[in-house]
Length: 210
Image (tube, rainbow, N blue to C red; front, side):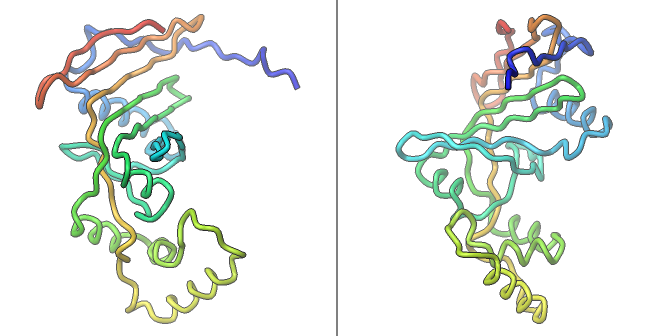
């Protein structure tokens, strides 16, 4: 199958350094609000990339759950592949792709666990099925089949009072030091505006070539 001729021209919007917000968090929130209003399925879906101790990268889609004052929060199993990689290498990146708006946002920084109470509060707000799934799934570990999982799920459904956040599950926050806002343009001459962190409260903003 020849896919070399598949291409799409991007013509919807422009992005100029003179009009972006000086705060990358506010610029992200603006774009996120526009994505949320554009009938995009799960605009909070993002590609999370981590790196193992032997420098092998891996990526997966997770859901952004909170934009805090310090960063971008997601939840997962601490013993999963990504959790194990973050234990040895806290560097990570996020990628949002909103094809309907012909936009991408890349965010890089350090990832650390949020507080236990924040994780408990979010866990308790989830649908019961999601809470049970977090308890019974040995995420990323090899299993023989689904039967054991299904049996554990049924057992917990019969004892809902025993459903509490497990110690192996909780939230992480990526604290960014780099943002790149990408707006698709015609002939692959895309607009790319970068925010590079200088210090605690200041960012250098510049354009890079497509």
